[in-house]
Image 1 (tube, one colour):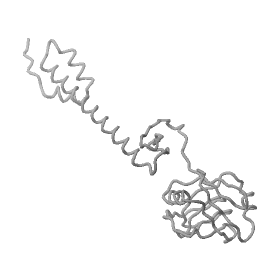
Image 2 (cartoon, rainbow, N blue to C red; image 1 turned 45 degrees about the vertical axis):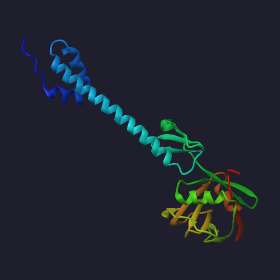
Image 3 (cartoon, one colour; image 1 turned 30 degrees about the horizontal axis):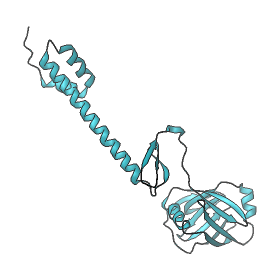
Image 4 (cartoon, rainbow, N blue to C red; image 1 turned 90 degrees about the horizontal axis):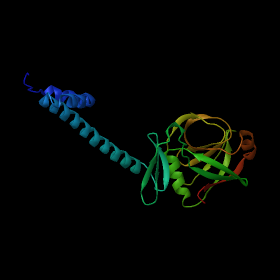
Length: 223
């Protein structure tokens, strides 16, 4: 019988195609021990490296999930997963695939004794407004402008995320960092969208905002 001298290439084959390396190890374990050993070692090294790489990726994913949450005790969507962190900083991840329900934050608007619900955008401007509402309600003396919006001064500035958009009735808009607008008609301009009113029809909203001036009160939905 020809002496089995083995070859490093069997190890290379086992590394890149572990299943083939395992099969060769089983088939040659008694007849070609050196070649079998090299193929098996190559496959084993590949499996170990893949396992270590998988562990590292899992750790990095959890770290990214934790630090991507602006505040604790909330859930957000991250790379197709729902990531929830409690007040202690402990996070859980649920994979719900395409059926995962998107997480929204909402605030309340009080206009002429009518309470409106605003679904907020996911941007730094909306986040900054939510932080200010944690300190208390915000009241705005708004006036009509252009027959498509009610606008008034916040009394402070928020970060902007301006984009050229066409507004829709119900859009809550930040203009020039310190002006808040509630739209009841369309307009195209470079603006920052903060959210959208979801519990009133376009016709009802337009009627609610009739008149030159009115008071708009922003409230956190947490209270």
